[in-house]
Amino acid sequence: MSNCGSHMMRRRMIMVMVHMMIVVMMMKNYAYADTNIIFNPCDDSKVKRWDGFTFGLAFSTKESFFLDQIQLSPCDSRLALPTKNAKLAIFRPKVDEISLLTIDGTNFNPILSGGYVVAFAGRKYAARSAPTLVADSTHTVTNITLVLEFQQGTLENLYWKSLGCDSCSGETSVCINNTVCAVPNLKCRNNGGPIDCNIGIQLTFSGTDEKRQVLNSWYEVENLRKLSLYDLYSNVAEAVPGHPQ
Image (cartoon, rainbow, N blue to C red; front, top):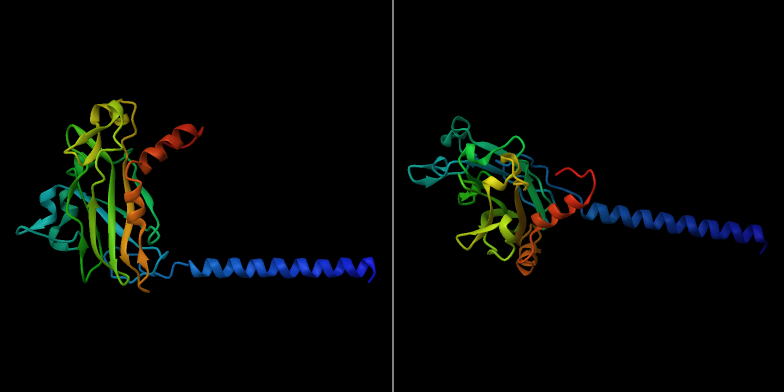
């Protein structure tokens, strides 16, 4: 075979290999494609692993989430949360991916909204977490863990999980009730202090997806309980010039 023929053969083989690589990459991306078309946190959805899932966080007073001593979902209009200075944040993480969700405190003060937060999603099951305190007149909780529990792809429960105070460090973070780390408000940047007191939520998943695959990101976080994704992110942000903080 001439050098020209050999060169053409190698070129065809390379083109075939590149084509195969593109097909494999497309198949991989398709396998992890987001097939969940529900974007409203107050609508029901059934998800598989790596789908996007929309849920909400409502900030208000603890009493605002109850009617006749029964806790209702923030989706329930009977709570009339808009009339109670409540604030809402919407997120769409990937199912079973460990995520760090942050609430920018530049234009948001959780104390003014009541200091408590409830996570929620869905209409039929109206899944909602218990109200948990994130800020009061003396401290702001900057790092909390939220678990979304699914059964065969349907959200059935959201609950806050305490990882203890192993990640509390120095004078900048104190332990509250032996459950969470918090920053004294006087040390927060919006009060003239040196610390970024944005609320950070470590989001994890448990249970099973639509195809009955086990969601196990919660167990991964539990094994890393001495680490804080929020602290890790903050350290990286401070080390990168020009990174927004």
